[in-house]
Image 1 (cartoon, rainbow, N blue to C red):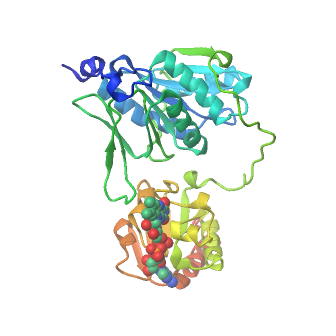
Image 2 (cartoon, protein in one colour):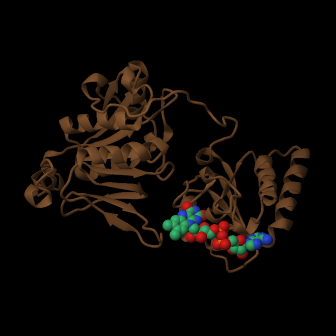
Image 3 (cartoon, rainbow, N blue to C red):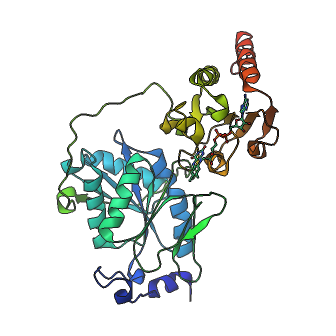
Length: 368
Ligand SMILES: Cc1cc2nc3c(=O)[nH]c(=O)nc-3n(C[C@H](O)[C@H](O)[C@H](O)COP(=O)(O)OP(=O)(O)OC[C@H]3O[C@@H](n4cnc5c(N)ncnc54)[C@H](O)[C@@H]3O)c2cc1C
């Protein structure tokens, strides 16, 4: 029996799962959904990245990938859906209507859950952006399904066709293989930048179905958007930065972080920090790199005064060149670094800054 046939034949005894919940036969669920998020009316990069694991899983299961986009404007939602198809989805469904304008998580989730009730997808994937982290658990709760957050890999159980949702558990040294054999859909999120952007194929086409939000939104919004404000638009977001200078507890003070900021500015990059640096109030939480922070993929990552705990280095797996500056030659960060400088950052950071500025004066551009 092929894997696709095994998956379709899969049945569970619903009474033994939970007699109070609606029956969900895994074999009756089909397709991998990727929920696409709009940012200023345009499909977000993290959503497109989720098409990479979706395609791999769909190929193993012998099924299709469908993009799901919700928004107030039909033209925008359609364009986003078509971009998802160009990046790997086989087809797309958009739900449009004024109800979705404020992007209230409970409202978005209720529309997706209603559509899922009707269509019965096997898997729903979402990027773990701020909004994705809120919407995905709502969907899971409405559908009485499980959810695995912050996955770093996906695979398929060859025996059952269940999705393996793979993520580091708290200690980050092992990988946990999580599956939900008796409930569907299988819902998971992965953080931005964990998966690469799928290539764009202009010639890829597929059907885009348009649905009206009035037919799918079942939740009454319990909150109302009164005003929204972009707090800092000047800086490149950490997830997109090409140069990142990250500081740890070894930096010690806010003044120390000002020196890192100067280095980051000279490189045209941004400052980030370890969790200890965040806990000490030296850098804001949205700049934390690692398991409970963000995953980054810069060309150059300079880790200064960071010991290199497993929970930190998991966030820099996709970084290009890693340079570590640490006073302790046995610090684990050197195992993850391409270049290591065993020295006090008080000497190294100003020296790097002087060198970059000297090169810039000589007209050789960035001093990297
Ligand atoms: C569930 C869980 C989730 C976690 N998530 C994250 C996460 O997302 N991100 C994260 O970063 N951590 C995370 N952690 C914490 C992680 O385990 C480490 O405690 C943390 O990364 C250590 O931060 P640090 O390297 O800044 O501090 P330390 O481990 O204290 O290291 C400081 C380093 O600075 C060096 N140093 C000191 N002075 C100097 C100097 N003058 N010049 C150069 N080097 C100097 C020292 O040699 C040392 O290596 C998590 C932990 C748990 C349990």
